[in-house]
Amino acid sequence: MHYVKYKRKKSSVCNLCRHVKSLTWDHVPPKGGIELTPVEMQSILSVMTANKSTGKPSESQNGVKYRTICKECNEYLGQNFDPTLNEFAQSVTTYLRTTIHLPKTVHHKTKPKRLIKAVLGHLVAAKADLEDTAFDRAAREYVLDASGELPRDIHIFYWPYPYLCSITIRDFAMFVPRGTFNEPAMFQTMKYFPIAYLVCSKPSYSGLNSLSMYQDSSLDEEIEIPIPLDRVEDAQWPEAPHGKNNVFFGGQSAVDAIVAQPRFPGRS
Image 1 (tube, one colour):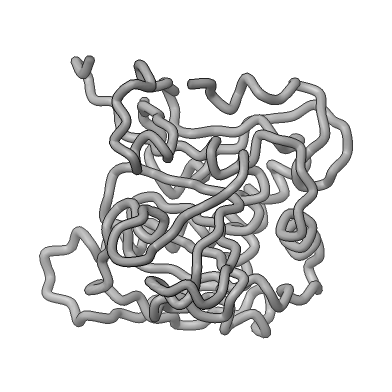
Image 2 (tube, rainbow, N blue to C red):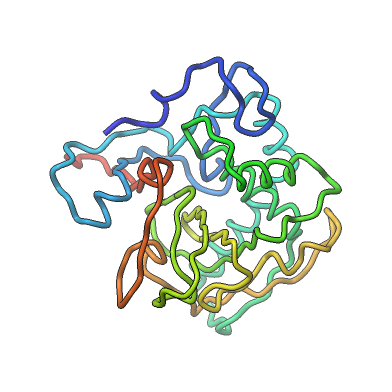
């Protein structure tokens, strides 16, 4: 199995600004919201199919990273949006680990618009191949334009993710509503302890809470958003084809997706 870092030349087209520049590493999820530890990486397909014939997993000493964006874009995300994304992750971590009895749903104050831009920015970065899909174009234009409106076919959902593995998948398709063959929809996902994000081309999915409903807020407007602590799904939900009629399909970007597990000392 190849690792994403071998798939892009050091000087190439930046996924975000689309200029040819010297590329830097973008951690997905970003450092600051997750502890960057040694990880073992397997393809998402080998994990979903329980295929043990793919050989020894790839390794990284400091989390999952993609050399796909330039220094300027990396700093742009890191300075403007990552602090909100990381603070949100740290707060959800506190809620999940506390010994204090909490209600099933807590409300946390954050800046939803900066949170949305952070999620979309890192999803744009998390693609090794040079592509220009409709999602890539719409997402990067929104991230780079402070006054831009969220495209109507980009809807972002979230839920608690109490798992140590991290999973980022680009450009896959499933049917909605879940378990039917009614309408195909495009998806992107970025999941890591303690929160998971799902981007869908449809306005709702499986009753998940929406970040997109706050798209009309100002960039620095703080809003208390609900966090459903009792909403816990499987680690490979919703992409794994569990249950009746759930179908997952995608192109090369989906095939290149990886599942990263912490590598513990002494583990062979």
